[in-house]
Image (cartoon, rainbow, N blue to C red; front, side, top):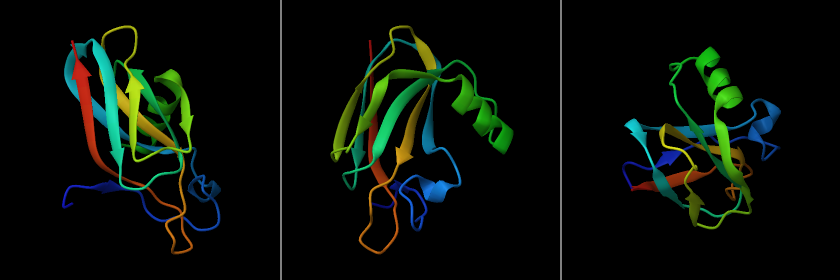
Length: 125
């Protein structure tokens, strides 16, 4: 519980209050690996997310975030109405970076929208 990753709470709109296209967790595998699957354990169901893959980390900045969103390749399509455990297939080609990209948040019961992730498990060959 002390290491749960969570979004802020957003009012009025499940798509981050209409202020950003999404939010995600960037995973650095340290070298390109053949990823078989990525399991994400959400603490609440609902929302929409997808897995994306990339070869560079442009850094922790607004410009870097925009570059990741624009250049990382979606792996399969987005998954809607998420359960609490979601398994994404890995990309066809080896990759160094993975992004669990969330585009729609579920209601939190307190007049806001938010989601949290308890664990991410990456399986590689």
